[in-house]
Every structure is written in structure tokens, then in C-alpha cells.
Image (cartoon, rainbow, N blue to C red):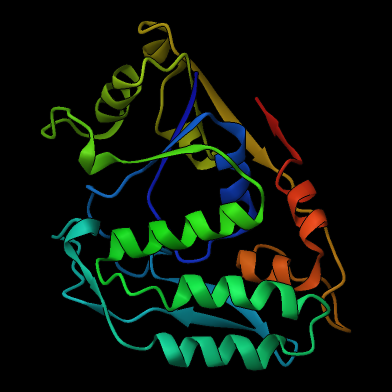
Length: 229
């Protein structure tokens, strides 16, 4: 059984969804500390051919609090308007915008649950059928940290393979996972250029950009274009 564990992010880039597609079970890592100035509540999109940042307002955000202990603010409508203005002329706006709107205007106020709902909405659009769990709902020793906590979650699900993003190569030890009969693998996301505006292609933007400039069928194809090492 293939497993991935990641913090929830705000409309993350396509590589995040390629990771979800690559596994049988995806665990939203919601009981770890929030990271200031990270990507949990912000991302980049295009507007007037310029890269701009969307930032979801938060209440009580602190690196001393867990992600699932934070509430979202009240700038959803403003962010939705920014997305609408930026992509109104995009070729697949009419199909993609309702999905983004539903995710963004979700009534959930808990940050972890709000982001998870949004990720699940996008996965449905991308035809990703991976099983979902919140790490806070998993019985484990919460005193564990780092690699040991990841291994505990892997053992909970009887995972035979743990897949992580490339940045995890500095965090995890193949030998340690092998001791638990778990194969440690890393995904190499494939960022396929596509026509955005008149300028040069801008990679690593939010999945919103991918959905606006590619058909649903093409988006579904793109999330399946990755390598495992």
C-alpha cells in the first residue's frame, strides 16, 4: 500500500496533486505546527500577465500552534474576485471557476478542514480517487517527531511504500524505513509547459492556473505525468 503524508496547502501547485495521485492513501498532516510565511495559506496566480500572491487571512496564526488549531479569516470574497478578474478571459474559465468558487467559499472555518475540503474538491475535478485521512484522527504517539512520527503513521496503515516530495530527501533515511519493511520513494513532479498568456510560461503556480488554461481532460492527464525514484 502506497502512502503519502503532507501538510495541507492553499490551492497548491500541480506537483502536490501528482503526489496524491501516486498513492493509495493520503494523510493530511494537520497536527503539526503552522509555519509562518510558508505556503499553508498562500499561493501564486496570474493577473494581467503578472504573478501575484493570494494570501488567505488567518486568525490566531502562530508557529506555536498546530495547523488544526487555527481559524481562517474573512477575505474569501476578495480572493475570489481577484481570481475571477485575473482569469475571466482564460479558455477554461467557465468550467474551472465554479470548482474554485465552491472550494474557496466553503463555510468551514477551521484552517485544516477548510484546506482539506478545498483539496478534495480539486481532486474530484482531476479524477483522483485516493483515500483521505486527517493525521489528527489517527491513533498514534503524538510525542513523536519528524521521521519517527511519519513511521508511526505508516505502520498504522500497514504501508509498504512511503512516497514524499523531493525536499524530503534531506529528512528521511532509506535504511530506517527499510528496517520497518517500508520502501521510501520520492516523486519527481513533471511540470509540463502550457499556453498561459502572451508572455513566457510561468511554472509552479497554483493549480488554479493549470485548470484555467487546460481542459479538464488535459488536467487529469497532467496529474499522472510524474516519476518515482
